[in-house]
Image 1 (cartoon, one colour):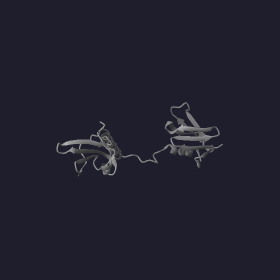
Image 2 (cartoon, one colour):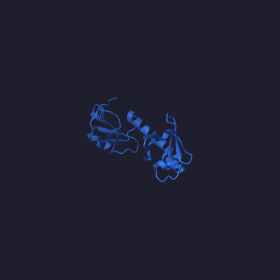
Image 3 (cartoon, helix red, strand yellow):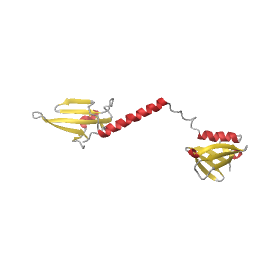
Image 4 (cartoon, rainbow, N blue to C red):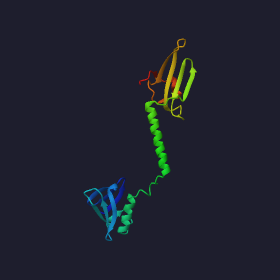
Length: 187
């Protein structure tokens, strides 16, 4: 049976008459030619130290006319440099900034620490709705914490403060504030 060497995700698959051998790409130390007809794959941290393959027995990758060509074909299966662009420092900085923004959003969402209302609705008699969200939040998305303050006895200035869903987590839709269930906060 001819030998076939294929890239299988994070592994290199070598199929021969002896069966299938899977080598984790991260454990491959180097690939060398030995004599004029053999390629040696040197493996790290494994009881298996070297794998020898004769180039004239290999049908895949095809077109390898000598051991050096087979070595280079196997090496290209391990090389990610041709497939992925390296990240520039500016791109890494942008990723770092985005992760920081995500951290801030999660922190504010979980702790309810946004102290100023982004929107205030006083259109209903004796009821004021306060919407808390991050700047630029879409009122049609579930990213709002909504507080309702109701004045039940205006002459005595008695008010009740309730929160949509009974909590201040930022998971409600501002545009649907009139149809939400309001309960005292669960803090």
